[in-house]
Length: 172
Image 1 (cartoon, one colour):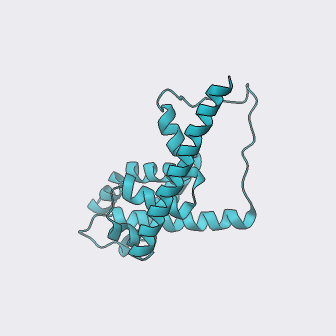
Image 2 (cartoon, rainbow, N blue to C red):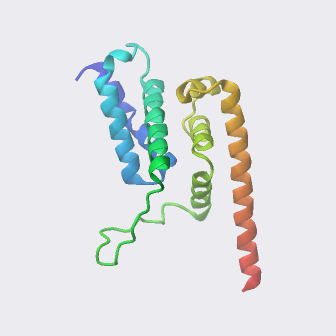
């Protein structure tokens, strides 16, 4: 296996983390990663040898994600049908996620995809504002605005959730 393919394979865990944070659906996230890898391997000549493939792969993944969101918006929202007890093959273990992290992840899903992507690129994936703006294809000012507004959205959602929990406790 050549060095370029090996370098791409080393990025898979980060791509999966980003995809799962964007989509919160393991199957759809894995599909997005697979599509990204297929596109990358099919266009290896577009990657500058000697550079890390990380920015290049995240750019590909982001473009695929945006295309997917546009398709879903045109078609309407997809709905998952609940499975009967005997049809469910496995149940997600919730002991690995505490209540606070579940709340943050739910709040992240409630904000717009553009703001979510900007926050994830900088806060989770560790890209600089300049790198993230190139990956997302927006000016740095737009990226900073999306991050600021996304953080405000998250703060409001999390404060609202905390307020609702405290009201429930009083109501009992």
